[in-house]
Length: 365
Image (cartoon, rainbow, N blue to C red; front, side, top):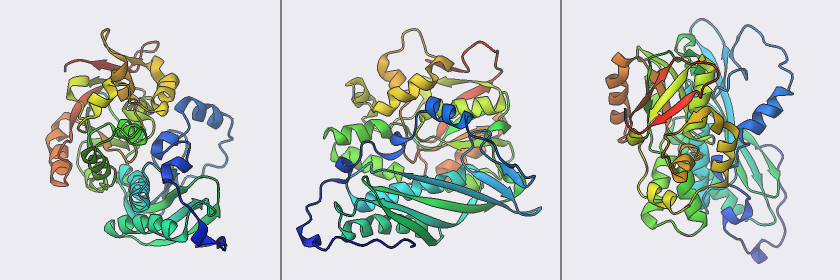
């Protein structure tokens, strides 16, 4: 790894504190709010757009895609964040799983990764940082790819993630803008990681709740490579820091469509609804809603916790698939056979009428 770091001489005198106490936020919850990000990007020149660039920054897709030839395109992305948990190995595993998800969401297959490492070396020992990197390396090994290099710096808060690269056939790239009216919406993983992470920081998360959070956040979305080859699958994205509503709105805007989701069909990780009812939510959830809440229509009797859950930031969340109705059973079979037991249909894409909310949440189908 380039830019070698000089460690403090008195490592034996170092008293480490929990990783999450070294960071102001954690996981995908520390992403810039959608509204602020849009404001910043609006001031950024688009630059050169060569014909080989199949997917760039124009449509909020999960990764960039560069056509290499008639049968191959390179998928490239980067993702990193501050700790969502205190265990160094778990932090590394979650961050690496999350970063690789963007490749799968575009229909690609990862080929290699580079590590992004920013650590407060006066606060963390080489052993702890090594465990973070080892956790990330274990996930990459499970994905069948090497960590071929990276870059490390000394910073105030711990940061870890990957630059990930993959390959995909140009005809199998799955972009947000390719969703179609009448498509069904299917979600691969249950929701609620943000709530569980907030409960963890407040010391309200049970041992079983932590295990469930770790199970879902370290489950690779490798099924995305297979789903991109299913006839009738038109678009995919992964649900991460902007919450279900935020990432579905990105898909809707890209295709100039609306969407309806059915609250009763949404899958939740155990104990999430109970915790949300008790007011255990992240600050990112409220920031997300402030950015896009005027584009969402909730039922008249919706409670505050339901709004919080729709904008709950998902670290290493599930794939959201837009597919033709005849493909629903095939997509669900792919999910279930790959170990995504709670994958289910949650709504559909509709025509959009300007001046109305793009996303409508209903109680029942």
